[in-house]
Image (cartoon, rainbow, N blue to C red; front, side, top):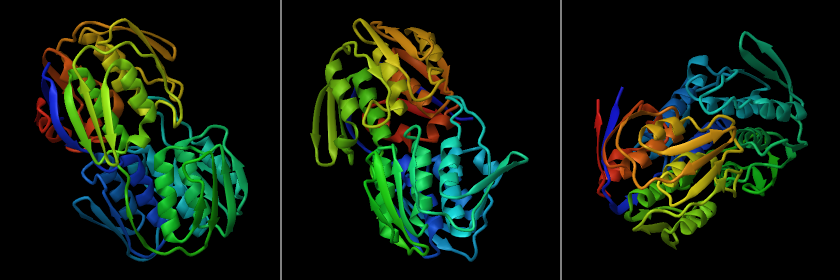
Length: 417
């Protein structure tokens, strides 16, 4: 397995180009299952592990995927299969998003039940209950869920929690269902709005995507489209936190400040100087951060995917900061690894209390998931001495060519095969 070796304690200075959003590109690519016509998706972070897994999923279901840099063409090769293979679903939970398009188009889908993962169980019951509300029946068989419906019905669905995956799955199913479907208490992340734009370009009528109430008037036959994916707000946020922790000045090109209002507000409270433009964000930091307490919430609240790197920043704060995780039940695995670097963190249930220290020390550490890996990356850039991060494949699932981007801003890090 690869490792990242970081010589930390060096301020970051320079520019970094933000890639397309993984969490938007992934459902949009899966939504190409809704049509037999060609689709062209631009600004895709195509080198990411999760995106390569998505390409494999589409090809296993009968699509042809042509990758040309950050542009991906999805073409039809004939009839589609309606069963997602377990060896792909176990690598990437988001593979269950194929259920919505396939069920709506063919009236039958079989998907393996995703297991738990390091950050929590993340059940798919909200997805399934939504499909049942549209008229589907489900049975469990040998670790798979089989859903069938001669025809899905347009209905009003209220989600018990604004689940991102369930909102996406139901939006895709509704796009290929004749009539008007309304999803209430929907997820409001920018990635929902981007998926809505793509479904609109396929021929569905989508209103309110990115708000709590989404209305989709679907069609049984959708056409091909060309679409450009939004910038990755989580990657942008991670780089902002890295600069705040290591200090210096960094300008992010291709970033959308409107997607990061809660994070930018917290950074300003911590003492960072922030400037924004139409497609860029600049941060400068020349001192230890002030203690700022955050509570993760669904968008537009503080994003759970930036909770871990935020904790890395707070390990260096002046005072005490609380970090409360309300979205996932087991997302503090990075705290123990930060403790190996000299951080003072006490975890109780879903709240961590961080007592700031003047500096962190480099150490051998190990990533447990994508965002925990990002937290260790932020800490390693700020720490004095050498930090070696093992299990870098977690970071590679969500951050494209991360060592090249950070090296361009003055970071000293290299990948060891």
